[in-house]
Amino acid sequence: SGYATPNGAREYALMCAGAGLSIIDVTKAAAPVRVQFTPMPGGGIWRDVCTNVDDGGKTYAYVAAQGNHGGGNSPNLFVFDLSWLSDDAGQSNGEDSNPIPQGDNGYIDLGETGYGHTINCARGLLFLHTAGSSDGCRVYDISENP
Image 1: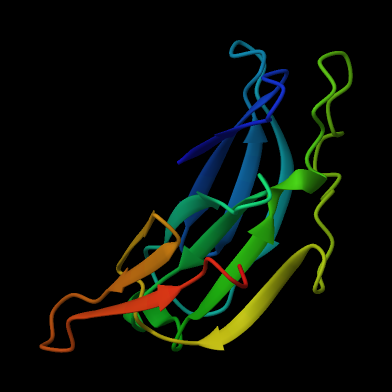
Image 2 (image 1 turned 135 degrees about the vertical axis):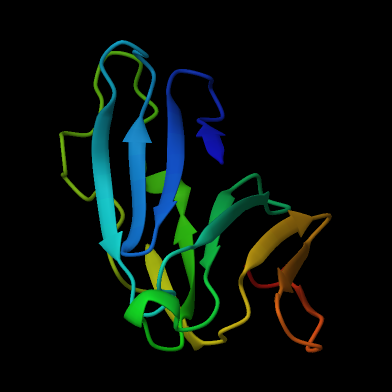
């Protein structure tokens, strides 16, 4: 998944892996820079991310995983406020500077869901899809409180 700052000055790739989320500044495609890595428990070998813009114009990333494949435990759902990322065309966040702090105004761990094999955001709703079971899909309203 990706994110472009509202002013269009910077572009970021949101890259998931079993160990967590990397945010990479790809504004200069020939010289990408990882600006954030957040380790995440559980999820084993896969993880997924989607983004949603709230009514105030702020973009949030939602990261989830499913199951305990590859030795992970039951994974958690995370929410990131992407407004912490640099929107200055001339100045990026530094390499591995981790500009998004942990906490209510940065990123938060919402706890175990074990439900995020595939995650989608659309029209103020968050869809967490499971795979390999009859548990189906969970839908959350994120329009009021991202």
